[in-house]
Length: 361
Length: 276
Image 1 (cartoon, rainbow over the protein chains, first blue to last red):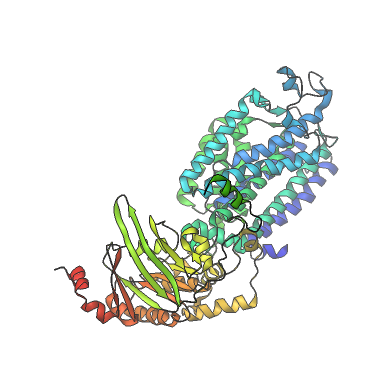
Image 2: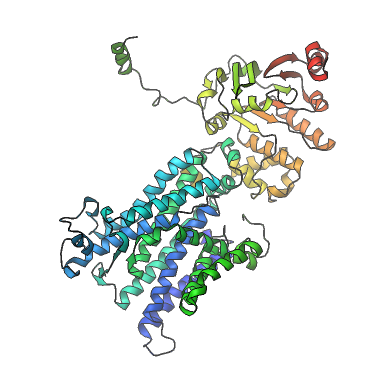
């Protein structure tokens, strides 16, 4: 495991920071009393957990964009699908504590006058089944989508456009009440997970720790791909796709494998996001969301993995701050940030920090 | 054959379907001394006949030069052999047993046909060693590639190829930083890593200095024998310096074949090259 981080300074620092956060944050939240200046509020813990989920999502985008040249403008869809799978589990945990007190059906189904659970909701009351779906559903969608797109050798901007169309189609579908996913309002009003109340500080801390762990493992997994020969082939595909074919690699298979893996990562990120934020709705499928997360990666610095994490934290922290302090200027700030980074920092913030070393960039 | 007979044939228990009985690419049969058979191949793009009843054969271990004016179909011919373009008719066999027209580009590469493009394309962000490593013959499916570890024999093999192409001094240099000539050699090196039986080399000396040209000539002649080499080239001096057999391509078919002197004295060739 340590071998994976050899020569990866940014990754080493990231792992160290994650380790520190995993120890310090729970201590300062649970053991230091409120009112003490060192106390970290549960709100902050949840916020950090949310950023961690975003960071994992950004990681998955960097893997396909930075290392394989596939600019996916639909990764938000995989994130949302993972989130919905988790949301469905949480919905069924509410039981008769909903507004309508129906022990079988979630509130929105009662409201729509449905008599029984649709077939695709069955099994989601089991946590482990839901966790499998968190990985399986986005993975399957990416697999089918990728198999069609990569076999037909759709590349570049055309591929970006169809990923965008994919997430937009899902957005429209999930808006419909008949789909059975709560329509416009999505899934919310969650009560507990595995029997623990979602409002409890200790549950929040566990979710935070799960997010730290997921990001660390996700980082190592991506790292193991990009340092393997497969990772080198992926970069080669980015740079000269035809040539890779003529040295005997099945380009479509390589793309499909990494794209699917990336979608699974995005799905896991979504599943961590939903219980911490408390809601999942079709807004997550919005094309704008997917574009935004590409911007995180660009700002942080692509083809480094840790740059994506940095970008996700930085942009989302500024978003939290700016939307609170100056709500009107947030979008202008994001736009300006993107323009500035594209013009002056083509390698992102990481490129600014890192001296010009000979790296796969 | 009537339908019933067809059905009987397809359920015979001593036979299997084609999809089960995959063509075996590992063993190429060259017992007749020929490695490449191109027969009656034609292809047209929007009515323009790029290749017109093309016939030629390459012997095992031969170094063959293909010359011809622009638009004679040299690159299209290579595209057909490597699976990039499908011909309208004709057949292309690799040895006696491998039908190249039924295979995809990676399969053809795996079977032992290596190609060097006109414009040198190396992987610019990878260093020389990595370029060669990726090209190395072996299991190129996704999972084995992910798990791949470099054995010491493989390491030695990469080193020896690096020696052959004269780039061992800069193993860890990024390919993007190489000179034009060095990129060409690296690309030939990448071909060698694939252990091909047949090398297709498209304009290897375009844009090279004289010294680089000489070195490339030596490299290619040293490869012939162990490999069969087909070189497409414009530069007549270069062709004269390396070739013992030359084919002249004109309007998509072979106009003349023979030694450089025979070809140069051929009346038809003179007409094509110099005009009436």
